[in-house]
Amino acid sequence: MLALAATLGGAVDGLSEPASGTLPRTVTIAGLRGETRIAVRSDAAGSPVLAAGPLMAALDGLLRLDGGWAEVTVARQPFRFLVGAPLYQFSSQLMPLAAPASLAGDSLFLPYQFVAEILPYFLGDRYRWNARTARLEELRGRTTTLAGRAAMEAGRLPNGLRPIHTVTIDPGHGGVDPGNPGTFFPRGTREKDVTLQVGLLLREELKRRGIGVRMTRTTDTLIALGDRGGYCTAACDLFVSLHVNSIARRRGYTDVRGFETFFLAEAKTEDAARVAKMENDAVRFETGEDPATVVGGLDFILKDLQLNEHLRESARLAELVQRGLEGVHTGQSRGVKQAGFMVLTTARRPAILVEMGYSTNPQDGRFLTTRSSQKSLAASIADAVVEYLVEYERKTGTAADSGARR
Ligand SMILES: [Zn+2]
Image 1 (cartoon, helix red, strand yellow):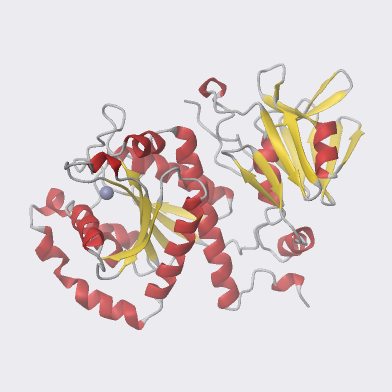
Image 2 (image 1 turned 90 degrees about the vertical axis):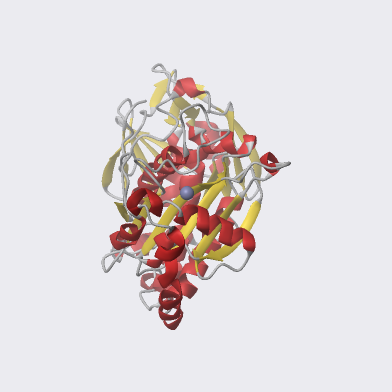
């Protein structure tokens, strides 16, 4: 596996691994006036590229060659590519590319990354990229670009956020605590491995969106449940814990699948209580104590939480994350739930726990251990975090688009 650049404009995930066969044969540009399919070709180095001519026609954009540069203008925003070098320039910044723009005959080809990453990133409220269907969709009635430009000039990120946010990612389990054994995972892969894989991808996705990240762990180590929340204190906006669900062997147990997002509260259903008990069980790896006694302080913490806004904020974040996952997950949505997760009680910020699917279901097991679907899970959670933070900034008066309004 190649190391991927974590910075904005770095290698597009997937492109560095052409052998994985995850690239589509065509991309669909769904503009307001119709759909166009454009073939994905390989350049001389085997990197995926798209013919710039048809692409600009589909995007209603302009293409201009200027010395060694190719300038494409989409939604009145110029992107300049240095032909033959893996570099592009946008908004006076020079950034790296996974593959260069290139000329073949007198046709210009642009890297696949342009539609899969760059356009949806910089013109995010105008274009949405669906990696699963390789479809770039133009959104109706947006006046994005002006707001986007104003945001940038006002010291904000292209997505409208101020560059001040930090999220703590908590990949569940680790070290001697393997989490659930991963019945339908490839041999030797357990819950702790999948939570770490998705956690590291989520870190990249958040950084790419201009959000700072702290990890409770980046390697296969055990962090005590009671300590994990401590990674999200004053300088942290949100706490996101990642887990994989499983269910005890009984008739038909492999049929249960899907994803759910929890926020901290007393468990409202038997199933929520079961999941909380299972995750809280990790305490025995740390202390040998019965988790039931350790989690006893929950009532007190809940009363405290209900007095402040964390509960409501956590619920909102959970709702946005769950809704986002509905767009990428192949299993069904099991909804937003409440439960007393010990890992959430110590975070003094809005905190959620995502059960990303069931390792005891064959389809979920495959989905959770496939690199491309792990990436779409991570990207979807990152998008939801951005949506939440934009909403939060607006509510608290640091309106993301106030710079664009008079
Ligand atoms: Zn877990």
